[in-house]
Image (cartoon, rainbow, N blue to C red; front, side, top):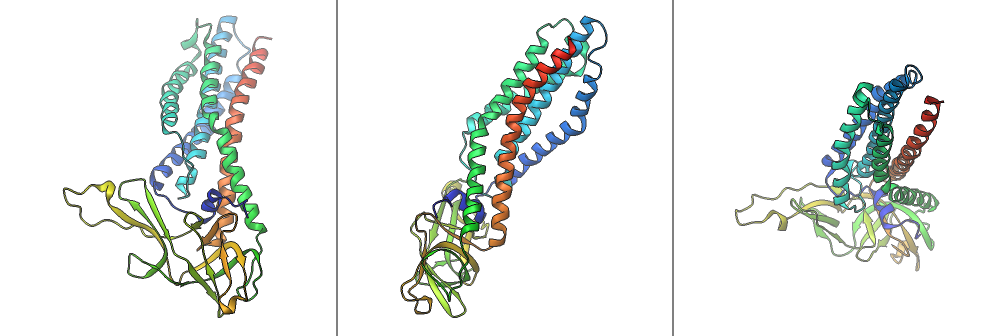
Length: 355
């Protein structure tokens, strides 16, 4: 089923790629920023709006400039938190992440910090911006420019969220089969992993049919997959996939290297990251081809026109896909809402202030 693309299958399987601690830190930062906005700055903005129409023209201009700066800061902080959450949430759950341009990431963060401080200074008190006639427009331009920079990721977030939803719907459409009652077509099958030929040695000496190694202190990974048998109730079938066609939810190992010699380089030392041992109970999603029945060992399940998905915790697959989609689609909506909301706020409140 082509709707289950490799990325969606990876999210369903929860394939961990490392870097969870760093991603979790950024998720916590995003949550803290949203907490500050909801608990302190949004209520302060509401208080400012209630006193905008009083006083002299000079006072109202200064108060309007300060309020516009506060609104721009709230929009900027909310957009930053939503962008950061949508970007790092997958990593915090140990899910695979799309490749991003790290330079643009750094640029947005570097610009957001000083500009948010500038807006906070303007928003601190109307006295700070008295006599600065361009302050309301300047606050809008700064906030809008930064919100648009963060909203640059909206298409990517929408694409990733839609991909997760499509994969979830596709998984729900795949019928469940029993090994004793097979027929051609896409199916979900549960059973126990058994050696069907060549296996790999696990970190504890047990045979494995899948292993993932990574560079110690590096980003590169290597995956090895061996065809195996799926057994249950005396029946079996062969699970087959070509290189790159299988997405496997493996058991995390987190192997540490032995003591390195002074001449060794950490980036060329490989350690075991995850493996799927013989005897593990799994659910396999793929295309079944039957030639004589499962009891005679002539049935097989393979990637077909999509990917072969092997999960040890299949019950959580739909939750992973749904949560991933909700966070990314929600982040995209918030980012778009910050841009539109800031413009609408500035136009409507300015008219009310000077009516």
